[in-house]
Image 1 (cartoon, rainbow, N blue to C red):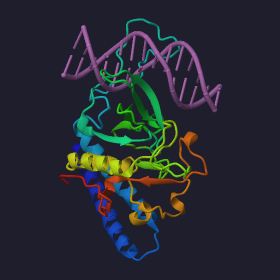
Image 2: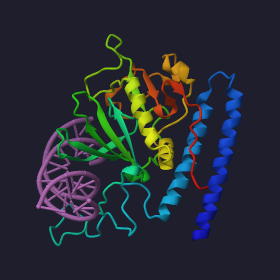
Image 3: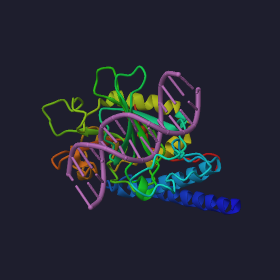
Image 4: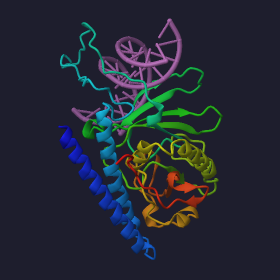
Length: 299
DNA sequence: ATTATTTGACCTTC
DNA sequence: GAAGGTCAAATAAT
């Protein structure tokens, strides 16, 4: 059992190394290339998958995959007695094991939108002490289908702005809905007469001051710089190589692949929208961090 | 009919 | 016991 595990890890490590080498090769080829960043994106996905798999394997040993996962003794989430509509208020069955989250397994984001390209299902809301705004709890819509363990908490900031404090837990193991509709800032340039950074509607895809976001992300990444799970989660949550050069992206000179992607939660998007997805993990004070490998430590 | 959200109760941790 | 996190029945939306 343990030997199999080890073998699996070795295989994954080898695969990851190969993908990494391939990525570097392709990158060199593309230095003067014409922007076929799709290869790069694909490779990052591959690397992310390996890293995520490795992380999960490692985490299994400790009996916990992600912050929200129930701990070791596999508690059947659905009691056998539970077969009909009537829960029969007989002796209350023990519900799932609720664990308080570990903050080190989380990634925090301050954003003007709660949209991140993934489909989330709200499963709870709670008034938080000393907070005017309630905290909303979401899990990945694909949890039943793919067992995706990604979760997030969303709480509106109380500084009067329309910003949201979003905390992510766990990692998406479901297929990404869209290679660009991933975890990052979504800028909506639909209404050009308004400054693209400001919008007041929380229910639509809104805009975020880039500087603010960069600063926050940079500060956060500083604090998390040694946290590998964060890197891995970045991959799984949709962090990917930009399909175009960041310089192009930053000045808004991005190609068709960025235009009007189909947001899975399309309530807020229309075909007339164009979005700029920015993953700030790769940007540091306006400079592009070209290297954003997903390392798995100790291997 | 199916799927998503709301909301009060339940559960764990501190 | 308080607070935070989750469940699940009821309800709403599609």
